Length: 91
Image (cartoon, rainbow, N blue to C red):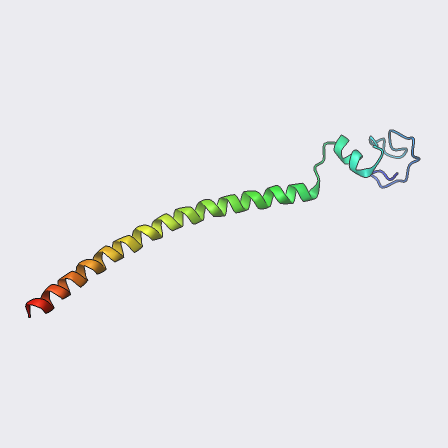
């Protein structure tokens, strides 16, 4: 088994590294877990999830603002259309 601290190869039964004294597990995954390190893939997934969550919040906010502008535009367009229609019918 290789030490994750100094990369020295150690016999299978060792609980600590012969060179640096780091705690060893039965496998590199177990050693990482014992030392409290987190898996790189898990960290990347958490970061991606937090980025997506933040982008979704911004998208909702921008969607709301855009909807207000579109609604105001439609109301103004409808009023202008009614004014033109009234002018044409009276003319």
